Image (cartoon, rainbow, N blue to C red; front, side, top):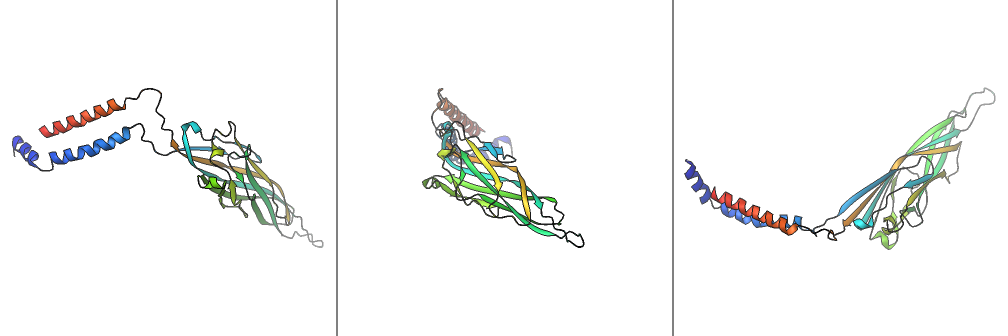
Length: 260
């Protein structure tokens, strides 16, 4: 088949030109929507910070209200607590042999937004961790570890009560509920916002040992989901000219293909 015949066969195909021309308006409409200045979708910003080793203040970046409307906040706190436990001395009077002693001690962990009303605060109760083991009876100091994970969510629905449920793994008694609102996570609430983490001996009585201290290693991650501000930029936009160039390019492509 020579070149001329091949062109005639291609041009005689019902789908060659018609199919292309039918698809062009659809492609043009989709590209036009993507280029329109008001076409905005949800966006996400992540901020994180390390937890203090002991009781201390965490510096977190609030959501910048100039970026748009805050729709929801996801908070994830994860880490490890290490407790140093002094076990009980227990020696058999006659033989002088040590006798193993079971022990159990507890530690409480809490979070509070600073100033009150910012970020989030454990509402119902602290997290309580228990550290259980068996001492040799020689009165040694034993390190014990426990991991933790908290996840919770704020949105327009939780704003009605200002409370949200906390999903937790690790503590013997979880915190249950966090207090907070979307407004408390924004820069308009306060220019300086901090989160206080507090560690203290637990409310559960110690048995067979004594809690000496606790150290924490972990982090907090806050995800801000928001709708970007659709206010037009101060400088003139060239979208109409862009669309005209795009349309001319597509028309030229169609014309070039129809001649081939």
